[in-house]
Length: 70
Image (cartoon, rainbow, N blue to C red):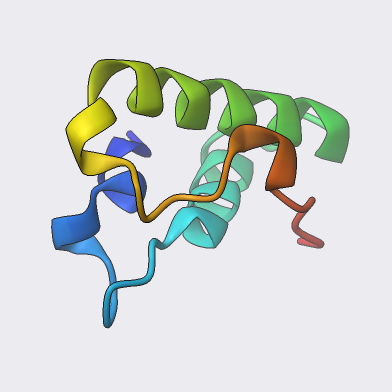
């Protein structure tokens, strides 16, 4: 559901769109609180980096992801 937001070919001007992942998760899982949404996005981000090491240089490291205020 949110993997495309980490893909550099789906980004905007070379920037990833991981901040949109927060919105998609929040909209699809409204019962999750902000900490749970953040944990899910960070886990998906980490998984993307593990699965696509050759296409993840543009991404910040998972520990650098800021919480989105939605």
